[in-house]
Length: 333
Image (cartoon, rainbow, N blue to C red; front, side):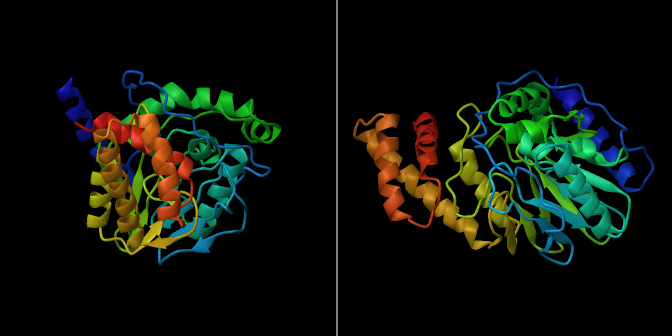
């Protein structure tokens, strides 16, 4: 089994190089799905009156990076567009084909080239369900873990979303889920021409296959689910490791980004990494104390939600604290 995975990684790297040089057609590779894994925790996306990526709202982030902002709306990610002289990478599709059409138009307009790559934060509909609207020769690249999540769970989540509201049903009614074209192990680097995009997988987070993208020439980190604009992270019960999350923050900091481009919310500087680490380590320490006192995970979650809402008043989403506490409880000795 190990030999097979290593072989595939070598093939993937070679194919990525060939794709970057235009030597292979876009859909050059198919990967057999990994064994089915349990679905990640529910997305928690409430209804949105406008769950679509908005046309003509692009903002320039740096020399090569652009953002289509989420506008503070549920179910809408910040879409990233990294533009090189030879190719363009889009990070996330938004909800449904209509959002994907906007992404593709903006990418082609900004890039002034016809080669488009796509990568996605994770398998959930607000990140992948617009992929069918990208050009037929576009190349969708994800880690092996995300490919497994897509195979196992995306259509189930779409079925769940369409039952939540008429707005989400309208956004997702014409989805024809495409399959990723290239799968990598832990890292893939795309040379877009004058700028590189590093696609990185650090292990399970909100889902099994969370991706971040680093653009070293511009110092921009598209942080996916790991960093948001001062919001407590949602750690999936069946996927996330709070310990690994803290270790990943150290790895993200080691990249030395200047700009944090979060999945949701406003742009931040690199101090957001230290800020999230401070909050999580404080939770970890407080959790250990309460566990030593004989408190259950549920009791500790309730206590710390109240305490941290006061201690860190500028942090949003304290309802995620009990889930973080449960992860620390499960992982503590």
